[in-house]
Length: 223
Length: 223
Image 1 (tube, rainbow over the protein chains, first blue to last red):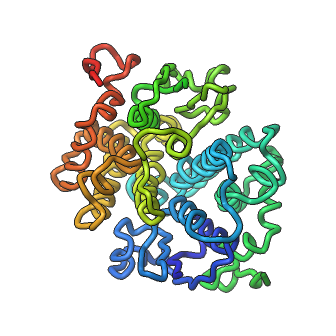
Image 2 (image 1 turned 45 degrees about the vertical axis):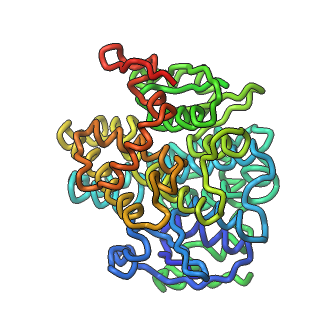
């Protein structure tokens, strides 16, 4: 499989974690969002939405949208399950994932930041406040869903990582980059740390990717 | 089942269509977002995210997040399938749904409009331009995924409505409300009209709901 991704893209981060948890080998093709390479002809031909990531299967099928890719990998591939075995459990995990992937992440993407800057002339401090506002709102909402819920375990749902933990990892990495303190959301912090302690998560971290700027790069994680 | 919803909420619209397609009887409980009733204690106790909709099953289980609810209904209930039978087809349908539900809809929600107005002091014309920008961007992106694709049929994927059509319905209703012309996205228009011609879609329309303002209300659709 070939994953078209960008080191900083949180949706790409999700798919990398899932591929690692499933034990699937993949080649990563860097698409530099800072240089708007996702709008280049080659990539636009693969994914007309010009959004990352895209996963190209060995038969050439192109899959897009991280949540859809995660569900596909879980249905079609062996390896660790990304969703619980029962329908209500799956609904809880998918709801946690959607909270982050639908209601928080899109508000902080480069295209939205660009619109705020270029069209609405929002200055840098107000833009930072925007990012921190939505990141914090979602940390609090996820904490409220996790804290004290009987199904919350070592991870968001039980004692194995699921799609919810995959989405949470990216959200918390983003929040930490924005300088947000996790002290007010202790369950989120605990569950996030349990995830990042796993090699599948650590190896997928934005700063562990070959296209991350050299100065920021972490040492590759041995899996 | 009990659906906590608001007539204008597009995420509620999705769940109403799915329940109708499945032939599931449900009671609708109106939560007035204009009066911020989703922040009232009663609703916040049901859904700590304080977002609509929430579906309460007969055993008291509370499901949230429309995409997660759609998947649950498809897995747990009989009636028309909301997803195709093959994993790659499901991935395509889920990607189309996620494009709309993740990458477009959240940018136009009341909480975001409120932030633009109250914190960033964006005036009404610029706010309208914001709504139209994201609505149009997504219409174009969905058109590019649908037009000429072998799997596109009478509906987004084949000749029966799926989760993708359910999400598309809300997006197009929103775009039309913003005065956006569908002429540039003819496949979207055709597929949308095929959906809205079905009683399950028509009866779920925001303006067909009992909590819609009387002056805007459509006559109830006979299903």
